[in-house]
Length: 334
Image (cartoon, rainbow, N blue to C red; front, side, top):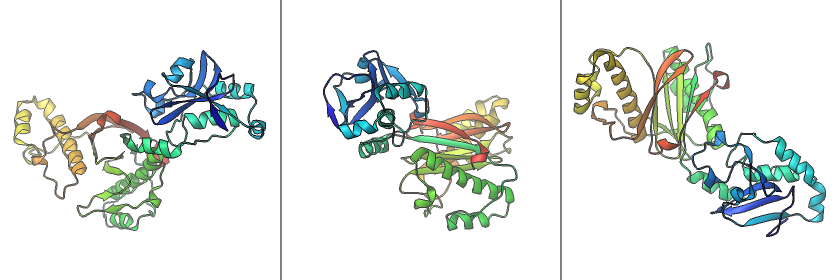
C-alpha cells in the first residue's frame, strides 16, 4: 500500500499529517468524512471517554493539512471490503466510543473499515505522544460486602496485609490493591504483575513506570494514577474529635478555623486533613507533620462523592489537576 496525493472516492481511507502524527478517516464525500473523533486540535478539552466515531466535512478533517489517499495493490484490494461496504461499516459505527490513543484510535478504525482488520502503523509515534500527555486518573470503588482476601502477586504486599490484625483494615488494604490492578490496565494498558513495584525507604509503594497513590476509608477505596508524583486521600464524612485542630492546622489555618461558624468547623477540618494527606503522599516524605503542610498554595482539589449511600471527601494533589478524571468502578470488578 502507498499513500498518494490524489482525489479520493467513496470508501477510500484517507489521512492528514498534523504535527508529528497522522489523523485518519474514511472518505464518503466532500461533506462526509467518517473518523474516530475529530482531529486532536479540534478536540483539545475532550476526554477520551467522550470521543466517538463521527462525521465532518473534508475541510474540518484536514485542519489545513494535505490530503493523502491510501492506494492498495491488486492483492490487497481482493482482501479489502468493497467500497460501499467500507462506507456502510463506517456509518454503522457512528457514535461508537471506547477510544484509546494506543489501542483503539482513528487509524485502527479507518483500517478496520477498509480492510476488515484494525491496524496502527504509527504505534511508536503515538506511544511517544501518549507518554508525553499529562494523566491524572482517579478510581474509586466500594469494598465488596463479604469479599474475601486472596493471595496477591506481590509477596511483600501480601505480608503487609497479613500483619494487619483488624479484619476491616485488612480488607481495605487488599481491595485498594485490587483496584490498583484494575486501574493500571484501564489507564496504561499494563498488568501490575508484570511491573516492578516496591516499597521505598519512606514506606511508600512506588513503580518506576508510573506514579500512583492509594487510599482507603471505611467502605471505600481510591487509587490515583499519573506520570508525575501525586497523592490521593479519601475520608468518610463524620464527626472529627475535639482538639484535632491543634494538631493538624498551621497558624494561618487556625485563625481561619477560629473565625468559622460552628456548623462549618467539622467540614473545614475534614477537608484540611484530606488535603494534607494528599500533599504529604505526593511529596514522598518520611514523616507526616500536617501542622507544617500549607495547602493554600498547593495544587489540590477536594470534592464530595457518594459511595453506597455514604458520603466521602476525595482529595487529589497533583500539578496536572486540569487533566483529572474520576472513574467509579463497580465493586464486582475487584
